[in-house]
Image (cartoon, rainbow over all chains, first blue to last red; front, side, top):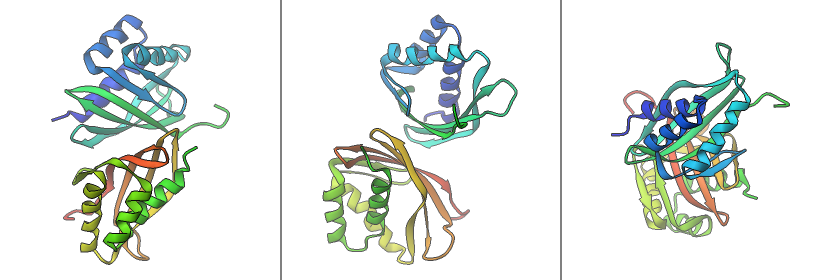
Length: 120
Length: 120
């Protein structure tokens, strides 16, 4: 059985991790070697491709991702919503991501935006 | 460019179509030959597999699917929410589906439930 919240929390942890070395460890542990990531703004293939995207987060040092509500899903399919914003404040940016899991590791992520401030 | 609302509306049309012959025509026109469908309750591969699922809807002759809000997405990825219920009434069952499109036809659907009455 896929632990839906673990998948979601590990994913959030990756985007919040500031150390490139630690990000690569998280990718090796929790993402399939041939993992694919795509959202309306970015895409990346494999651990290197995904790591390059997560490195972008370093540009916004005061912003952190947080899980909104709980993950839901079935079989190898997981869905969860997240917020991105300054620590402790309401998240101005929100989205929902869909994961496909394979052997306990993330095989693909397709991300959609739910809320984006005008001008962002 | 993928016409997001067309993808969603054609999909809703299929589930509402009561004629098996017409459903097969819609599948041939709008779904890839190797299309895959999966939700928490059912799954089906290819036109025959998906047609078998849509045939289940005949058990609920008073219920119809309707699109809730507009579809959104990017590239070949589409997301939309739907309601299922008696014609003209508020939909007691709601869900959100994620489509991947290929050459203008639906390649895969992954469906999640957003609202389900207790005991349903």
